[in-house]
Length: 77
Image (cartoon, rainbow, N blue to C red):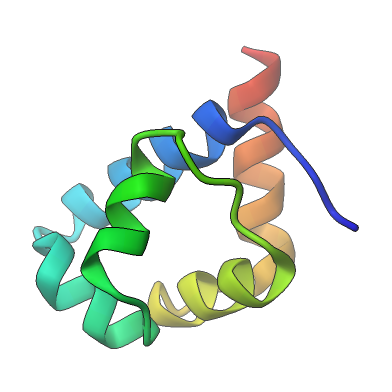
């Protein structure tokens, strides 16, 4: 199972969403997630699994490995 720092994942996902000026409601719709699920991920309360990372990356129109790399870089900073 893929695991990484929940806080770093949430911070990166929130930053990318805000850079695109999208609300949680709109972005969660693009990603096929419940808004509450996205909110828990962004707050670092929930560990996103591989499918969720895949959905979020696709909603950002980036390959999943790029999103994972950004999260890993955030965790190391």
